Image (cartoon, rainbow, N blue to C red; front, side, top):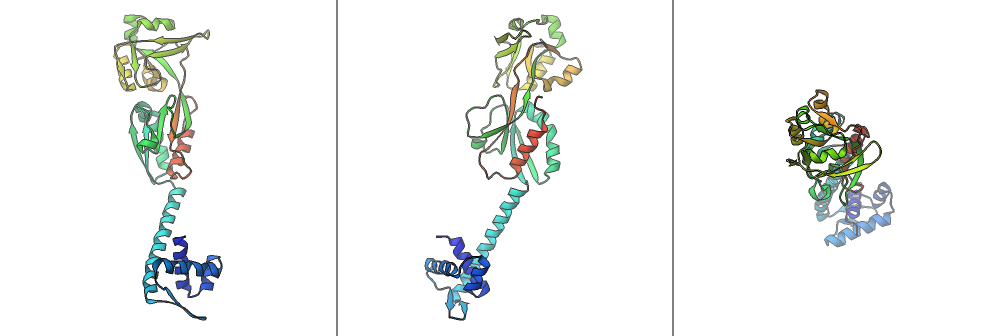
Amino acid sequence: MDRLAEITAFVKVAQTGSFAEAARQMHVSATIVSKHVRELEEWLGVRLFNRTTRHVALTEIGHVVHERCADLLAQFNELETTAGRWRGEPRGVLRISAPLSFGGGPLAARLPRFAALYPHVTIDLTLMDRYVDVVEEGFDVAIAIGELPDSSAKARLLCNLRSSLYASPAYLAAQGCPTKAEDLLAHNCLLHIGGPLTDSWGLTAPDGQRHHLKVKGTLRTNSVTALLTSVLAGQGVTLLPDYTVAEALAEGRVVKLLPDHHVPELPVRVVYQPGRHLAAKVPAFIDFVTGAFPRTS
């Protein structure tokens, strides 16, 4: 049974005063329209029309039912129109999760452009240094750095982050400058916990030799900002994405160590919920953000 089809047929007959004309406007046969009206009458348990060979008129209860059914169809059409606007034009609140430094830096720098393109979208940006399950936690999209855990979510690559080793001139003056990967084992290494390079730093030497160093030090933190602050204060050596250190490096407040050694790049992905019926704001943001970053940052 299709109550919507039954209601639509009933309202159309009431409006046109004819089963044949209702059928013509609905692009179906008069038999189908008659069947829908009869099934609606059986469901409600009342007679909706007085029928003769030449005339169709609403009964007393038919007038009452018609008024209610016309309202229902109007609400349904409004719902369909509203959903169509959401499919066709990005609008509403877009909930984004991103790591603290990346979300507050490179991502935030690009969001004004997205806002200008889509003025009916309000961005709700939450910054946290942990993997966010968009399906379980109700985010529209999440920015994730490193390899993804098993998840039902989908993902697209934004870019690959370059990272390097850094220390302050004051620290190097006091402790010496490492000239090879093994030298890091004797240094105070400041560690980013919760990330893919917590306490095992991988470096590839110019000759292709790979080193996996179990380093240690006096600071472990989930904040890239705290690591940079500690490095600038001369506390030790750390491994940071290059974009976080660019300004301090240009000003000479930090020094890049072992610049001829390669640190594995970290993939940055935009993660989103699976499904075909995403609100237009989600694919609009995904398309925007995947085009807004160079492949290597």
